[in-house]
Amino acid sequence: MMGCPEIVEDIFKEDSFLLAEKNAGKIIDREYSDKTMWKEIIYRFTKNKGAVIGMAAILIIIVFAIIGPYMSGYSYDAVDMSRQNLVPRIPGIEKLGVFDGTIKGIDQYAMKGLDHTYYYFGTDNMGRDLWTRVFTGTRISLFVAGVAVIIDMVIGVVFGMISGYFGGIVDLVMQRIIEIISGIPNLVVVTLLMIVLKPGLLTIILALMFTNWIGMSRLVRAQVLRLKEQEYVIAAKSLGASDLYIVFREILPNTLSSVIIMAMMSIPGAIFMESFLSFIGLGIPEPMASLGTLISNGYKSMMIYPHMVAIPVTLFAILMISFNLVADGLRDALDPKMKAG
Image (spheres, helix red, strand yellow):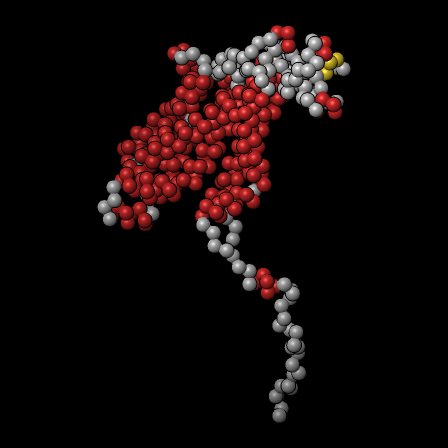
């Protein structure tokens, strides 16, 4: 028949519809096990190598801050001018030619008749054991970090919750208070506190209580302003739930991830403030040790005895970096927007 197309031979073969990869079936049939929210958070956190390393470093430092001062047998404030400015000497390792108590080829320990004496981090210019003083100072820094978290969690969260939930004139007045407080530099606050109080840990804690919670309160307020318009909050109000119940049972749990992240990120700032104030002489007074005072004292002899400043600076840097790594890991693990598909 004219115009009728010719019958075309079938071009498809038996293997035309086979899977391109031999293991493609396994990919298609992959099963995902169910996980609770916290198991998923832990799983995502442990996948972050930097966060795991940071957490391990923090735990090790905490252990040494607890037991370290008791390992050397020396007190942090024991002065012995006959043993001043000794370089580190560690048993066992000294045979390798490092940490053997020598400086410029001279054995300081042999010169002073201390053949069987060891100072793991050496001594300072007053003959005090640096190992004990460094880990005693680390306790101070970790204590300040813990106080910073408590301040953020209590004052910042409560202030932000009240401001964001009630809004209106309450929010207006509370935000003006924050603007006034945040406009005063921390150093001015500490200086004014020193006029009334003596330099010390209490002064630093009061300085943190004065301004450190402002960032947390602003974050919580922003979260509350968003969450209080959600359907489940409106439903709770329509069912007659009290404001206290709604704030602490409906809104607060949904801001918890942001609160934890912000609290962890405030720790390095608190440690830095304590060290900075101690470095300039406004923090922990002698003979009590802190990382800031140790860095300040070691800085004066840095060119002759670099170990006095290198050891506390290294520990301080590890603390700062580790807390930042853990905070970043928690942010990635807790933030749903960061979750991969």
